[in-house]
Image (cartoon, rainbow over all chains, first blue to last red; front, side, top):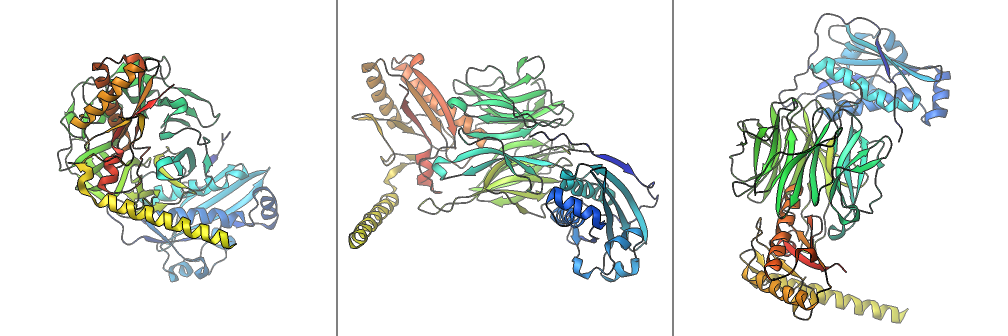
Length: 446
Length: 158
């Protein structure tokens, strides 16, 4: 589990001043930018050494495949077929023949080079504007060879940031609940994978029911609900060391945990005598505070990114609706007023929106609204879906969807899906088993 | 081989008749009142004539007349068997968000607990465990299946 990774990052050349190509991510992008990702060039010696270490024939090609898949998944880019490339990778990285790339309609080009230096993987890459015939960015990384996939993700983040003006979300991980078995006796395990579905690992064995894992935004800690010894309680798990502990000493079920934006507190529900209220616990001094005090169900709390407000789910009006309040529990205000029931509010990392699940006339929707409840926009409708989690840049939501079963109760499945904030680019996120309750990590490197 | 085949056929016939009877049952609308389940399909018994579970309307934790009758039977049985302790397991159907359903299951089980307590059962003998929508008894995606899943089940703990 130990995964402390060092990545040294430096600029080869200063940025060129001219802003050249730009990708607009605020609207649904129906014309993804044609981009050529040239395989990273590699000398024969380095190639052979890497083959021994990572068991892949050509690490340069593999890293470029990671970049390509990321760019395609974002929906903003259209990576071109490599068969059409005219220039060889090593020469392209020195000085692209822009006419050749122009011919295959590439507007942007990524080139690069891989070396083995002192047992370390050294990668440099360049981003070129084909039409203007100019270099837009050049960076180099040094890291341990086993980190090669992360290098692909970091390259994608840099390219995304340079072309869209916003931070990327590719060097990230997803924690989720892996599911198996019949619907009436589901076996659930915590699992973690890279954002692109690679490096999947199970973190629990499935002996007890586990639900709703969530990342700490500032570290590799996770909070989740476990039915260990049939006592549903909020737990804290360090995914580096595997250490876990119960959060607080509550005489009943604690659930719906999330971290505060500074990672120092856990906010959650505590249910007692048929009433659920919201509590926080400070992870340093263990001080517990009661935030709501109402005979209704108060649950699914989520902090605003500045930590000053909390949105949550309550049925105090008679039905599930979304409310916000100050972080001390004062100033409670209902913000959802549309038709139907509202649940699972999650504050966007950008601060301006709240994502939610809505149930209306037998259908489930994932939607967003402003923090005052205005501007409600439903992104996707389905038989059953819920639990959106934001990408760290606030552009993409990941959630889970369950299928309807037939009269014999057959045909059930649970899968992860992602969708852009724009409502476009809905995608199935591949997982080795059925999956639910996804939570997106922060960027692992910046 | 032949015997095997005969057995297999017999098995198929049994399965087919079970499936058919299940269909016949689920078509009767007499199994729900409003959307509260009133049938017996999934019900087990703590003792003769003491059903183990009560059912709820969508999003509700109010005990129906039938539920109260069931719980009075449970209370009488618990009074007679004073050593027995129970866990009330509260459940919700799949048509709600996971976290809200955990709270709802807890609220339902507590509604049953409160009623048992008014009939003289000490709270020391009753614990409550919510499963939300995690443990349906019927895996169907239809109103009848959902009505069976909205329940509080009294389970012997010792």
